[in-house]
Length: 314
Image 1 (cartoon, helix red, strand yellow):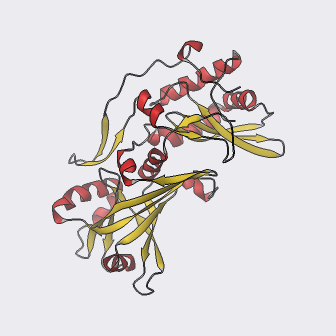
Image 2 (image 1 turned 90 degrees about the vertical axis):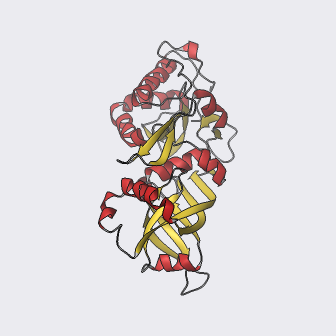
C-alpha cells in the first residue's frame, strides 16, 4: 500500500512552509563576493520539478518524488572539493590524461581551477580546451557503483583578468591553503564552461543534464547537514527506521539504514535474511532544516503505527 500522505492525516504533520520565492543564501567570503548560491525551493516548485524514483529500472512501483538530476548533480558538485580532471594529451594526441584536481565554483556552479603552467594538464588544456571533471562522494570508496557521481564536460580556458578577483575569492573560500601559492607567477585561474553534464544516481538512475538546467538548479537545503543527519538517524533513530522498513517493505528486515537524504525524502537500505533491498520514502512535505527532518520522521512513524498510508517504493 503506497499512497500519498495528506496534511490532515497526522497531528505531527509538519505545517505548510511559506513560499520562498527566489531566496538565495550566498556562500560568500570575507569580502562578500558572490560564489555558488544555494536556493531553497518552496513546496510547489519542489514537487513540480522533481523527477520520479522507481525501485528499479523495470519497476512498475509507485512514483516517489525526489530532486531532479540537475539538482542532485549541483548538490554533489557543491559538497565536494576535488575531482578527477581528464584532458586531451599533447604528448599522445587523442588520448585522455587524468589528474587529481581541486576546484572552486562560480555563481553558476561552474568549476574553477588554480593550476600551474608547468603542469601537464595545463599544457594539455592550452593545446585543446576540451575536458571533463568526474566528481564522486566519499561513499564511493565503499560502494563505487551504487554511489552517485557526476561528469561535467566543457571547455577549460583562462579566466579573464577582470574576473580574476571574484574567482580568486570563491576559490580561496573552499581552498584556504591555496593562499600560499595563489600569487605564484606560473599559477592562474581557469574555468570550465559547461557543455554537458551526465549524472548517475546509482543503479537504474542516470541521465544527461543540460547546462541551462544545471545553472538553474538549486543545491538541496539539507546539503551541508545531510552527512550528520544520516549518521544521527542511523544511530539514534534505528528503531524508528526498522519500524518503517518492516511496515512499508512488508519484510522481516533485520536492519534499516538511511543511505541518502534530501528535502523530499530519503533512501532506505533494508537488510533481510539472505538479501538486501532498498527504496525511497517520501516526507509528507518538503523539509529544509534538521528539526523538520526529525519532526517529519516522527510523523511518518505515527502514520505507520496508525495504519495510515505513506508514499514509498520499498
